[in-house]
Image 1: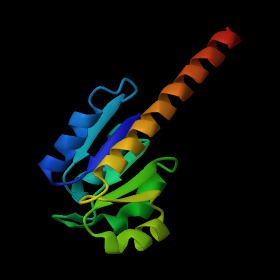
Image 2 (image 1 turned 90 degrees about the vertical axis):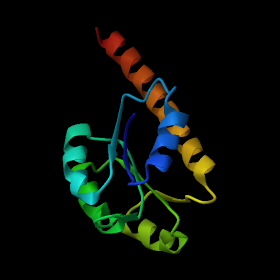
Image 3 (image 1 turned 135 degrees about the vertical axis):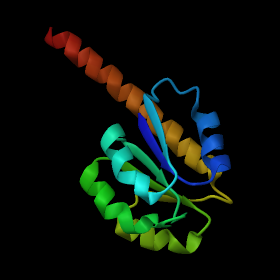
Length: 134
């Protein structure tokens, strides 16, 4: 799993990193603290999971969901914000899920752990398939 977190609050992304640190299938992790950093991070990492805060120092991430989909079409996009009022709009724009920072931190972590497990299982299947082809 390659995870990109777009959030300018070090306490939030620090806690996520702490909780996800022991995941074997977390192959890469990158932090972007502003929208200006986003294109470069997307190009470098090619993440399959992206966690976005709504409010950032240089704008709102919701306006970038379409361009994120163009860069990494298969990536899962999770919005993680205190602005629950944006949930329907975020999903309409293409976010896969919305998690409220004040009440759903554990649910986001559970979703990321489930995604990591799915990545691990897919990697095992690919390894078995590749071995069978040899």
